[in-house]
Length: 130
Figure: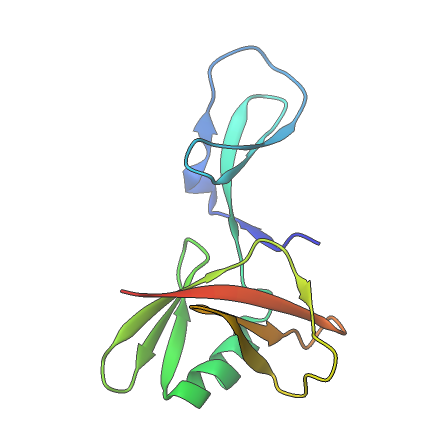
């Protein structure tokens, strides 16, 4: 299951050329793009499936707050002022067997958290300093 959000209609672009069938492609920048049959192009960004849980559990555990940004990332600000950008994965994962916590670290600078609305699924995200 893909977890994406369509960005605000101000980001629609007119793609020159002949009308064609709708398409989902990856641009040279690595971002997914949806092209409708009229040639309009919209960039699709990964999105946090359960941002309330992310903000309520993860940010409280590390001492701070999160704000979802227009590009689908989340800005985590710690109480000391240090900031991190959380970038969601494009696809949902599973919850490892025996995992009882809401969130866990599953790689260097990568974490996952359990989705409350979809049983046994998780969403991963990368963390980078801002």
